[in-house]
Image (cartoon, rainbow, N blue to C red; front, side, top):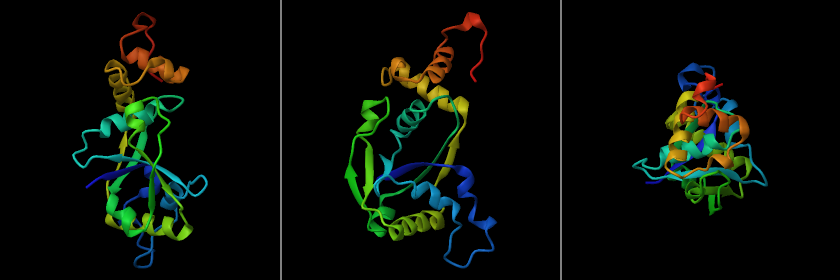
Length: 179
């Protein structure tokens, strides 16, 4: 089964056990912010094979799309969650510096408040993977993608480009450390 990746903020997805004040079946409001951040009732996600062989490529592409090196939080859930919430999925090219990863991008379309709530609730209750890669790992993933020719240094924003060059061994004589 295909997995769906959405970038989120880990702090919004605290363990369900921390929310003993919630009524049964309810969820805290915070996770909704990650799924309700829509544009024209669409939400951007990436599809990842269930064997996860392309997960690092997707994470590298997302990290490479940022202004600077930083942690990256994400949630992985199954395509079954989309079907259960009756969410429409459309192929739409992504906007990352990795053209191959851009083909894995999808838009969740025609989202209503009810569908967003249903999707978020189902992902929350099944406690699907919510993970973080730290800044160092994000830089390593992007540097690896640059080494393999998947991402061009020229497509990176200046501050991130400097950190990637440092990671690749360029500018070593300056003694600078990644920010």
